[in-house]
Length: 222
Image (tube, rainbow, N blue to C red; front, top):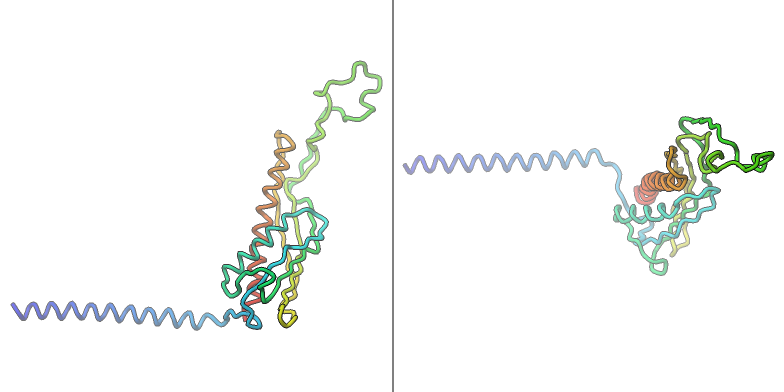
């Protein structure tokens, strides 16, 4: 009986040792793989620890939600963790983003709808007594020639300055682009406008998120 208990204990001990050895081997294997595959590291440029992100300066010809780029830049720095967001009076560096160009063009399928309603202009009333009813006139809020989508593109110029040494740490231009779905139908013009604005905000935020990540990576990856 004593021999059987000892044999059982010995077998249990061997299984534990084998399992522990497997865990150690797996950890070394995964660690070594990570070491071999990773040839880049992040570091704070010029040993700066804090950064201030100025409000985005926009001189483009189109109205876009540029404040979302400012928001995504701060989120990208917070996710990276190398630099801490700080007020201008306490920061070691400052980031300035300037949208220098924006263009919006029509894209996608073109729709042409014909209507027999009269144009709403002074000639409509010539020779008519009484004048036409509103139902006989075209609704100026509904276009009969339009595209289903709009494509937008912007260029943002980024500069990062060391506030202690007055050294320029980063200066590059980044492209942003996307598409907006312009919904048309029997709804009121106000509905189309709201949907267009929602689609533009969503498209611009997605593009700004990716660009903000590239900016932080260009600044911190060595």
